[in-house]
Image 1 (spheres, rainbow, N blue to C red):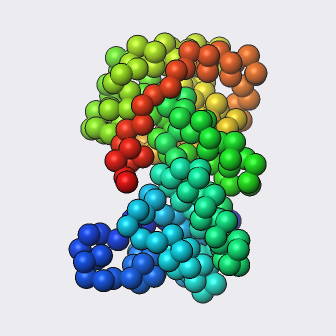
Image 2: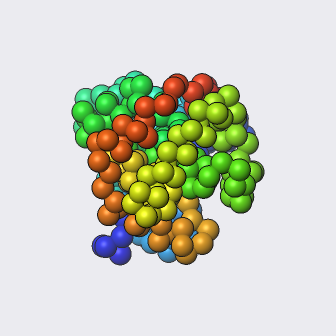
Length: 250
């Protein structure tokens, strides 16, 4: 157990829970207890709030999370789908009240959706907060050439589709460059896409449905892109509109 870092996530209270006056503390602790029971473990290393909770006072959230760290049920806490100012506000409150601070941010970030670079990346790097981005391969788009629709996630993920529908031509040009770099180094496109992300982030979240998906992800750790490679992959990007959780959760 000591050789493996295990994280789990939890959602904000449902509308029904809020109406029934379920407290933030009870909800947050109950969610972690359920995860620990499902995992058959006494603690997790990282407990991640799935998205910023606009219906609960931030102070209540930070105090509830801190109580779980002090109880030994999780070692650290993280947040997903939040803005830099929200993490800064929450951590400033925690620091002022001797509570546990967020140590990681799990945002939507990959080679064809780089909006975290507006503020989050620099904020996280300057404040020792780990970047653990999800959708590292853009629901499969960055692991295959345009036209290959074999990814079930790419076909079914409507949130992801909405992120890329207005920039499809630009995205395809970037994906073509991923293919070129993969050919250059005789590796997979997955390897190139993740190797690029590893120049920015601490630990990308990578989905896998087949064993070779895991092999491709692991291989990315040993692929070192040159500064010229990175520039070639990045130079065509232009900003995307925010859609999905970040746009809708308010």
